[in-house]
Image 1 (cartoon, rainbow, N blue to C red):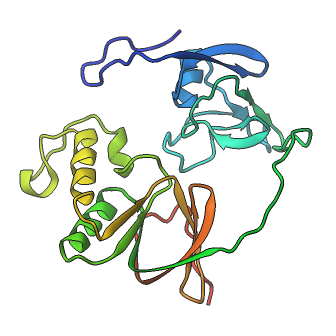
Image 2 (image 1 turned 90 degrees about the vertical axis):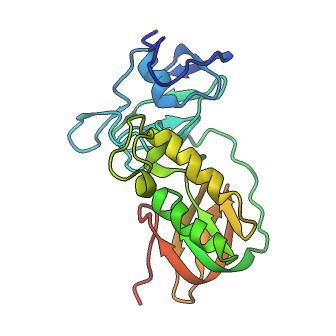
Image 3 (image 1 turned 180 degrees about the vertical axis):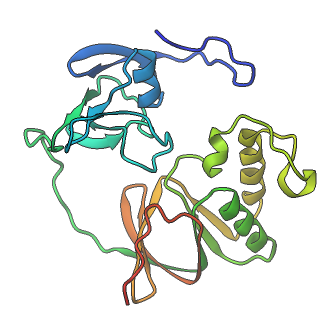
Length: 240
C-alpha cells in the first residue's frame, strides 16, 4: 500500500478496513475513505480514458469541480475525488462513452410535491467568502440558507495545510487553511437565523426568481429575496 504513515501536520487515523473492486480486482481501503485516495494507495493513478483521443485521465482538481477522475461506481458515473468508499462497491474505468449498467435494478419511481421554501438570502457556496457573508447576516439575525455541494464547510480551505500570510485580523495569518475552515464553520453555527445545507447543489435560478436545489438527493425550490453566488460551478442562470 502506498500510504503516508507519518505526516508533520495531519494525524494518522485508525479505521476499519473494507474491500472494494476496481476493474474486477479486489482492493482494500479504509471505511469512508475517498475513492481517489484509496485508488492511489493501491497504486492506481489512471481512472479512465478520454472519449476522443483515449488519453489517460485521473486526478486533476481533487475537489469535485472537474470530471477528470470520473469512474463507474455500481453502474453510475461518479467523481472519484468526492466519492467515499463503500464496502464491496464495484468501480470500473471509463473508456469511450460512459454507459449506465442497464442490468442493475433501478428503484421504483415515485412522485411527490416539491417543497417550496422562502428565505431572505440564499448563499451558494460555503467557502470563506460564503461563510463570511453568512456570518455578517447572522449577526443581523437575517434568515439565510447556505448551500454547498461538499460534505464539509470551508471550500478550498479544507484542502490547505499551509499557514496563511498577511494580516492576522483580516485573514488569520499564521493559521493553516484547514483550521481557518474550522473557525469559520464554528462562527456560522452560532447564529440560529442561518441554515446550512451540505451535500446540496443549486441546479439553477429560474425566471420566476426561484432556485432549484437538490438537497441531499431531494429536490426543492427556494425563493430568496437576494442571492449571494460565490460558487458558479453548478449554477445555471436564466437566459431571460
